[in-house]
Amino acid sequence: MLGPLDVRPRDGDEAFRSAGASIGRTVGEFWRCSDLLSNTRRGVLAEFIVGSALGCLPQVRREWEPYDLVTRSGIRVEVKSSAYLQEWKQNQLSTIQFDVRPTRAWNSETGVYEADAKRQADVYVFCLFANQDGTTADPLDLDQWVFYVLASSVLDEKVGAQKTISLRPLVALGALEVGFEQVSSAVREALERTRNG
Image 1 (cartoon, rainbow, N blue to C red):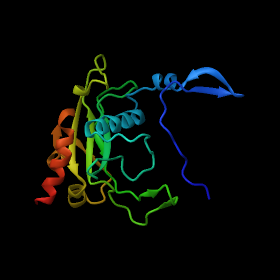
Image 2: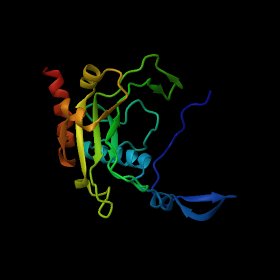
Image 3: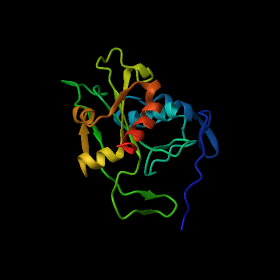
């Protein structure tokens, strides 16, 4: 059986090679041509932003881990993203929705899924790229993002096995609405709220 691959961080200068020789393209060039507002790339970017706010960026992002981040104090965090703007032509702004479905955890060491589906993290951080003007949209400007933080136990209790949640019901559940600088304290507060009843 093959074990998990030893994946290491890249610095961007590594060259793509063919027949042992560089083809004149680097990892950095690949990164530069990545659209940060596309749905999949924005989700990865949101994880990076939240990991930066929490001071817990992994050396290498692991796609199949049961949750996205773990704080230094051991809080497991799931990051979800949504946006009003899309990279394609739109007739109207997108409706904000986040995926909250319970999942079966994948164990990369054993290559086996857990039997039961559940929400794997302690806390969810819902990242909304809130800019609604395509001429000024800049996902690197963290003031254009709004973060909603909610303990997973609240989702378990209030929405059960529901797969998605839109913005208004999320706020109604008591999600903490914060800016980038407050994400870390909001994660701790969301957990404290559930522990203190």
